[in-house]
Amino acid sequence: MANLITLTTDYGTRDSFVASMKGIILKSNPHAQIVDITHEIAPQDIWEAAFTLRSAYSQFPKGAIHLAVVDPGVGSGRRPIIAVTESYYFVGPDNGLFSLIYRDAERLRVHHITAGHYFTASPGPTFHGRDIFAPVAASLTKGIPSGNFGDEITDFVKLNVPTPKRAGNSIDGHVIHADRFGNLITNITYRDLQSLIPDGGQMGQVSVTVTGKEIKGLKKFYAEAAPGDPGAIINSSGHLEIFLFRQNARTGLAIKRGEVVRLTVESSA
Image 1 (cartoon, rainbow, N blue to C red):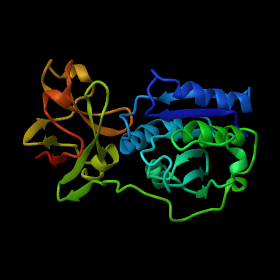
Image 2 (image 1 turned 135 degrees about the horizontal axis):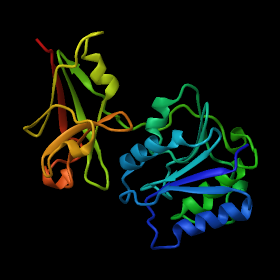
Image 3 (image 1 turned 120 degrees about the vertical axis):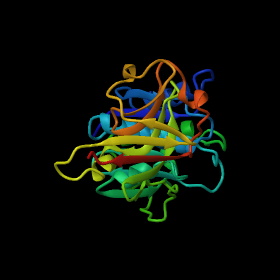
């Protein structure tokens, strides 16, 4: 049993939405610990929420309950679910939000939440974060088994997650996220880069091409690039990242999420 609940939403902090969820959790379990991952997901941006949750969830102690709500289909026929992996619980809507969690999991069960006696009284059609997901997460902190909330399902929704493709001495990937600094994170990882380098060989010359712009070499840290010059780096999460030192790469390079990125390694002579 864990008392720790994290929250990831697109609710922002101006309105009472987040506070209402926390209030419901604490009324049910005054000893619950609540940690905000973020409430600044772009409105209804399920992919951004999926990526953000994927970047943070494993930093928490095993047993943590990750409550995530970015829910364009609230009040419709989309299902509320609990996903259970070997280490964590995930509570939220069945709209693909947990797609990257499913990909990471070694063991996975997903339950359709149907046991209405765990909800608030008379749940409304527009705020399932407060009326369904918060009380269910709070109930999990009390050790109630996930199976008590509803039957296991196998047809849960998955987003079409892009994966890098290797072609000769290159890997083609995509920009999958822009952080608040405007740095562009791709789905190409250090492990992908290693696959281009023969065992015991030298890295050789690395180039990164995106929207016709070529970036030579990889930096070890941001300040290796001159101010305003584009650079590429393997970030602390192990992803290839494109940046403009002291500037915003997303706006400065006019690059959007989904753009194709090619990483090429030329072997040293």
